[in-house]
Image (cartoon, rainbow, N blue to C red; front, side, top):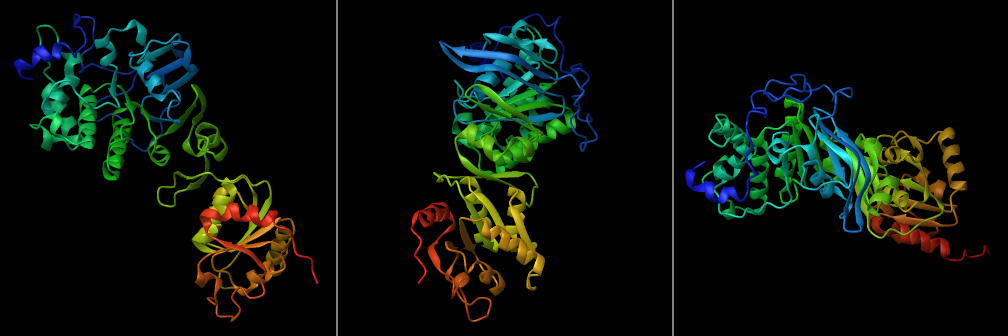
Length: 458
């Protein structure tokens, strides 16, 4: 870093203590966690659940004035583990990260980083243990990108000594974040997303055993969102870094994180693997939103689909049909709280897969084959217990025949679905359809159909 920057930096950097009592970057270890390029060679190994946590938060309470922002929160991050922190705005995510990096002082409880209590550490000692990627990417002065990234090496500078590892560490950080091409540009000349990557590079240049990130993908395009979290994932696996990130995108958190912690109103509702933590009931509590939680067929991670202003349905609804229309109908009705059954659905169809993910009681049959007696009997039993039936997407004559006699049938699908697509010359003829709607309005339509009086038989 050039000498003329020392004046402005003095206002930004922590006070300098003697280096004799502090560890150097070369001999840094993390309770046994390796931090070199060759550490953690077996990248397929899960985090060591028996290892002492690098980040250990115990019963932490933080208040601003009379308002408690965190209430007895406990959370740990082990070496080689990536934990996602999720919750709606104001849940306490940023406050928790500030307590970990020493910016906020807890009213009660303890925070330990790499075995040391954060409250007992100097700013320099804390910065050698944990690096931070904040939400705010602005800098007080017009630094070049290279100089801004080199600020990450400040904890390793002494009063009269330089940091021999600075150049290599900065070059690695610039290369990892794809910001080397901006090295000579000023930070102020970059876009918001580019500045976000520079701030990430600055944190990586610190080469700390722990890393906390506050919305690291907020200003990034979809390509760099994935690249950024993949980079953190790589640091965790290859170098044993303990990473904790506040992430708004639940799908990305589920895809890249080993565990997810859900915060709501200052409380930690749950901590665990994404597939265990991201449930419909818990998302309703944490985010006040109805959502379907399914398995992404590509990543196999949970994917969350929220539904706006879904009506509440306290009734039993049977869904028949196939394809995306039936799949969307199943998810929408489940999110609305209805007791949903399904069938007969074609085996291997997307609707059958979604029904399985939702835990819906389902009757399936091989596609393009007659429905056997057992499947027909099971479907009739489910239909008999349903307050309403939704026929969604294309359905063969045998399935349409099953729903034909139900008193309240709602139709979801395109004109081709309701026409003679199966070639039997019947289409929906003979089915007394109470209403026709789209997937997005199916819950409201079912509620309306249930409220309408039934016509008496002649």
